[in-house]
Image (cartoon, rainbow, N blue to C red; front, top):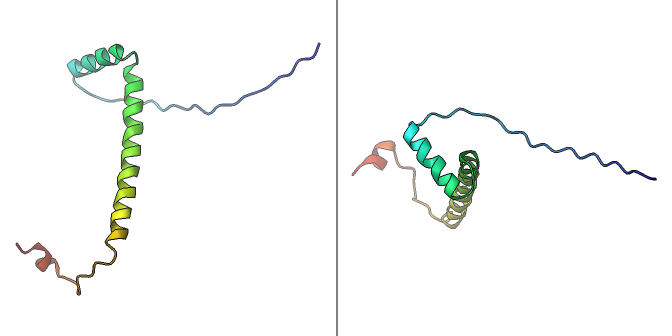
Length: 86
């Protein structure tokens, strides 16, 4: 009889954090998570991931816009006072 042993290492490190929120708000969020078939922790992880993705997407859009506008030249450097004039 032959046995093959496969060892799998996973790096599923989670960091615990403490958040503060009104108890009523936490209860409402927990109830919504239950309705969705998930947990409040999972909802938070998904929200946190979406923030990272949103920030990366915003940065990419900003860089694309700056590249598109790179031809713009004001002709000279404006002083702080000039830029703040109304």
